[in-house]
Image (cartoon, rainbow, N blue to C red; front, top):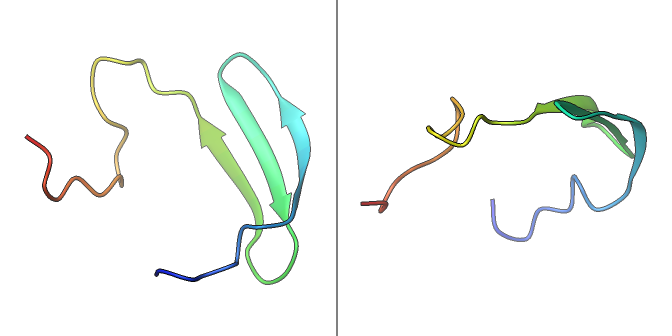
Length: 51
């Protein structure tokens, strides 16, 4: 994964208190990011080496 440039150029489509939507240039396309509640890590986040 090091050296990847899939998410270097993008456009913010929308931004709210709970959600961010970005359209990335290239093959990645549109992604939606949701705010975590702060008490736990969101699912899908690599946690190797923590704790």
